[in-house]
Image (cartoon, rainbow, N blue to C red; front, side):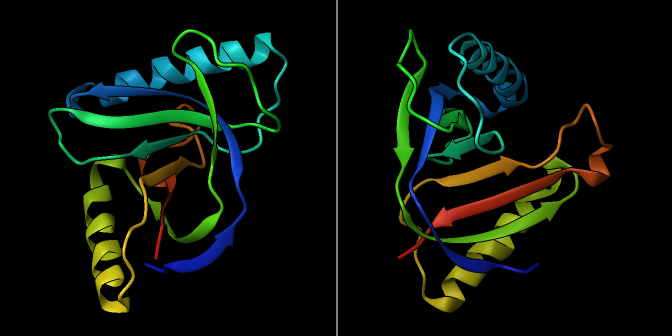
Length: 150
């Protein structure tokens, strides 16, 4: 697994933040992405990147997650939809290929690499979904995992 460091500029995003159990995550991601996409189409806001989930904790019974899309320009908050910028920062990132159920191993290797390099997470962990389960088999899923570091 190759892990890279890069400096990323601030990125505007439209998102919904939720607390949910891990068991409901797959269904909730799909429903939430649809809700966000419908809103962005209604306000004619173009996307500027892949959908993501940001993980603010690892409590599998009560995950604190943010699901969203990078956007080209700010959008107005509406109901439970919000807007913010993911701050500019130095990020460590890797691309994982395979089923989502196997990502635990990738995270383990990633955390070991952080420990070995002396870097520490400085914010939530992000998963960017580079292709769609509707388009490719599980063995071909591509997920970019990244975290701001200090």
